[in-house]
Length: 167
Image (cartoon, rainbow, N blue to C red; front, side, top):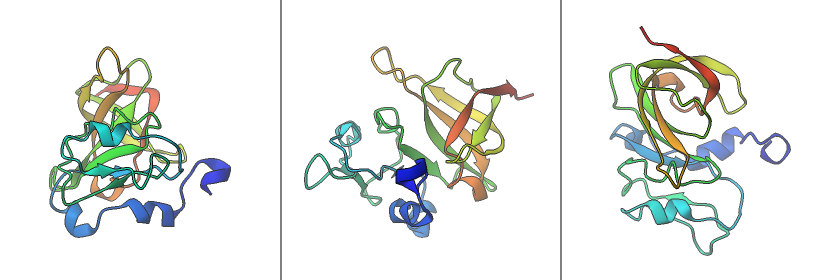
């Protein structure tokens, strides 16, 4: 239960998951933010205005899946590390998952990274497709992992220091 252990329930996750037909269309942001706190950097980061925090700043963010293009600008801007992007069209057997990451060292393109579930369970080693810095003022990086499609909605973190050569 979220309040007790920080892990959302299946129902919580279902409430923010795009419908299957939208996932089949390409990259889309998913806001796994379930607590009502005064926060809206994700909405401000979205140039498409696909993320809204309404009726007031204490509401949880809602993504308009029809507008979102999955660019990922919101991922590094979320102070709660609660937004990620899933692209189920990445390849025949893999999805691309863009995750926020705030630790050093940062996994690099071409390495394998140990992907973790929401509860910290190791799910496997996945190729780092891209690592994008958040910039000098935002130390949150966005790490893109290629994961089996069946794990796209499960991989939500990267084990700190859990990287190795991808060759």
